[in-house]
Structure formats: structure tokens, C-alpha cells
Length: 488
Image 1 (tube, rainbow, N blue to C red):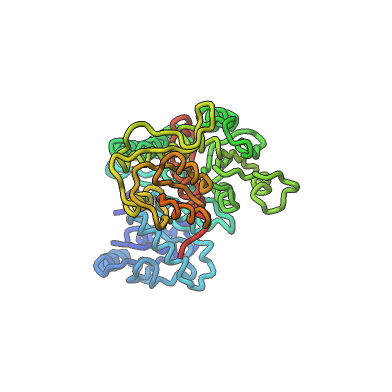
Image 2: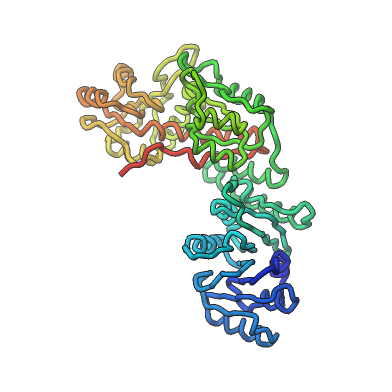
């Protein structure tokens, strides 16, 4: 009565203590484990009474009712797991399995062997979600096998507590899994995952989300061919061809600021700022290179302090490449992304104009003319959606908008230039008090969308251009690339 999925689960059971089968249904698994002699005692739980009644009949028909405890329980809520060595959760969605594990870990129950339990997990859906989450909870997949059943491929994984330091999975790893080298069904499993990712890529392309399409297309390729290495110097040359480091402002410090010992990377983390939290994420995900917008070394360093970001980069042998004003100035850079987003949300008349002319055909920011005037309030609402910020600060005495200048980051000092160029609206971040006063005095609509939000949007574009060139690299936007403040 035990199918291949449950047989594989049974193989992963250690047999060293009590086995608990969550969502036991007919108790087929525990019956086989007890009858085969692999386990001496078992707990079979289910959230519904009917499956438990079926389980009871099967257990009694095998004459093992004295060795199997039947428990009506939502997950492990009513299960005493003292002495349990193995917990099997099979045949459920990945999100449901994840919730059962999380609820158990957060339950506060004094269970001495919680860190020694073998978690045998067989998700039916959302497998990538389950893999990623259990690593966040301190578990690690020690073994994983693919199983074919009725023409479908399933995965069974054995997870254990991995100690104080736990790695984190990238999105690519969460989809790919950790199969044994001799797993004959692993290639079939990854092929199906690749097809699923490619289908999503095509759908995103049709909907106009080119960045998303490129991302999932690259992930599909990695499922088939795997993640490969690339020289960091080659990545530098490629990015230099798109966002020349030579055009950075004279006061800036963009470039490869921290070098890795072997100049090789396979995983890249993208972030606005290289903070200790981002570096910790890079270490846990095994990233070899962090590419940021803001330079991790800006002012000359007289010493490298223990625990500082530069110290942690060197200590963990992680390269840091920083692209600041060269990306702000380059055509497809930060301000170019803002230009594209304004075009998507407003009807623009004519060609955009240079805001600050940097010479040699380069510029910082753009000016656009709207086909129809927009009220300051409605304009701000759209900006909030574009930048994903919690609020937009708007000058009190501005009017409707028809000619708008913008400059990403901290561009409050350029309000005078916007006025000189006949603009009635200006978008930037980090606006100081005196600039607001000036804006109200002259009646221009000034919009502060935040330094972080007007620049962080570039990371999606950066991931796209890198994945188009290097689909075999594992490239991820840092989860810790976040606004450094929160709002109450």
C-alpha cells in the first residue's frame, strides 16, 4: 500500500527513536516502519478524525496498536515529541509544511532533542518556498532524492538542525535542490523546474516585464546547466562598457574597491549600500562579489576598524565593486530607469532634455514635458507607486505639473537649476528645510521621494543587464538592501 514517495520517506527514517508521521492519513508509513522492524514505536497524527479512523483500522489489522499512538492534532500541536527522533511530513503543500515546522520551533515547548530531530519532508507544491524557509529557521538539507510516481516527479528531503551558523539559500538554490550525484530522477526533476521557470519568463515578457523575464529565463538556464564561475575582472570590464567608471564625478570613488584573492565569483549580491547586514547575508549565501551603488570606501581610510564593513569584506574574502555617479550619469543608469518609469506612467511630449549637462554628451538627470498637466497631489501618488516609498514629501505652494526635472539621490541643491530651465516640478531625495522654503517661495512643486527609493530601483535593471550577459551566474538583489530607517 506504500507508494514510492512514502518508501523514500521510510528510507530516510533513522529508526533510532520514535517516528512521528504528521498527516498520517491511513498510517501506511508507520505500519511499514513498525512491521519491517525499522522502528519500535511510532506516532501517527492527523488533523481530521476520519483519516485517524482509517489509520486505526490498518494499525489494528497488523496487530501493532500497542506500538502506534494515534493523535488528533493540527500539525504537531497536540503531539508530545519528547523522545521523537524522526518527524515525517509528507503529501502536503510546501507552505503548510513550513508552517508546521515554524509553529513547532516557536511553540516554546521544552524539548531537549529538538535540535537532533530528523525532518523528512515531502512537499507536493511550493518546494522552493519550503527549502528557502527551513534554512532561515536553522535547518539544513543533508540529503535529497527525486522520486517518480505515476508520471510525476516528487522530492523527498532530509533536514536537520545545522548549528549556530546556518547558511541561507539563494532563489536559484531554493529551486534547484540538493540531490545526490547518483539520483537518476534529479535530472528529470530539474528539467521540469526549468520548464516551469521558462514558462514564467515567457509570461512576464508578454506582460512587458522584461527584467522579470530575463531573470526567470536565466534561472531556467541554471537549472539545466548549473551555476558556473566568471572572472571578476571580466565583470568589471563589461559593466565599465555600460557605465564607464571614467565618467564618475571627480569627488567620487567608484570602482573595484575590495578585491577577492582569486578574482573568481559564481554568486553576486546587489545592494544600494554595503552594510554589515548585507555582508552577513553574502557570507550565508556564499556570495563572492557584492556590487553596490554607494561606495563602501568613500573618504580616505586611516585605519581599518575590526567589525567595519571593509574589515568584514576582507576577512570573508568578498570583493566589493561600487558604481555610484558613473551609474547616475550613464544613459541606462539610475536616472535612465526613472525616465523609463515616468514614460510608463505619463504621456511624454517630445524627447527628454538634459538636466545637468556634464559635457562630452553626458548628463545628470533629465527634463520631460507632460502632454497634459497633472496636479501635484496626483503626481505624488503616482511617484509613490513608481518608487515604492511609504510617503512622498511635497512642497505646499506648488501648482500643477507639466515640465518636470528629476535627479536621483540627494539632489536638493539643484532646485535652482530646475527653476532656471523653466521647470514647474522637480523630483529628487534628501531635500533640506531651506530648499523647501525656496520651493514654496517660487511656487515650484518639489517632490522628495527619498534618497534610498530614487536609487534602489536601479538594482532590478542591474540584475537584468548582468543576467543577459552571464545567465550562468547566481545573481540576487540583497534582502538587506533596505531603507535604513522606518516610518511611524
